[in-house]
Image (cartoon, rainbow, N blue to C red; front, top):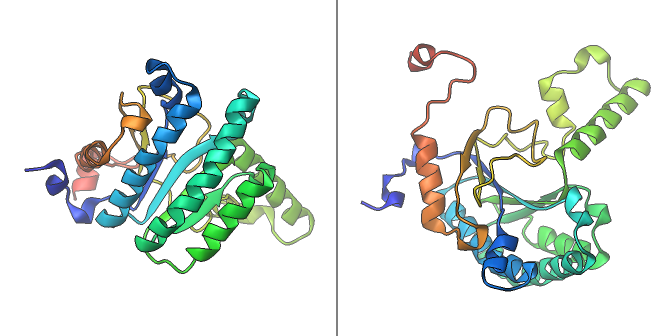
Length: 247
């Protein structure tokens, strides 16, 4: 029986988040520049997105570019931005074919105009799709997101739009860039690193974490299915005891 056949549809996570790590090391192992790895990482994005859509996963969030990534060499950043434009252009038809809706989170105002234009065009074209929602975290960091949420909450309190007594877990969630999207049940990180790297810190509070040694350009459907199968083997207690969960 294949790994995919072992998956139980009713126990699939509604939302999967992925830190796509290892592009640079993959390229270095082959004597190429880091952008060579990023280009080959696009195949993994396509495989995981299509697999998610086929399985019925509702939300997939990919950590594509962090605010800290702006500190990388300018040649790499410029090449990444150009790759974003070309990839979005070439993949829009595939998203439409697979009923995938594109979404973004992050400080996208800092992205080049050409990237924002392609993103907005793809978001508009796929806005009517009702299957998987694919969210790209671009120029994103969780600390930035939380700071912006605190600023907006403070502003609304100051303007008497909000009372301090109304502040709760749910309300804070409404001020985050992921408002309206359920928290990820599963977070996958490739390349053997065991860090969250400033990604969805609030939203991952009770997520299951899955780390694998595979570098992102080599990550394929079978690897994704293996992560989902591992998720289904876990007991999620949310602070309760195992006996309470079983009742």
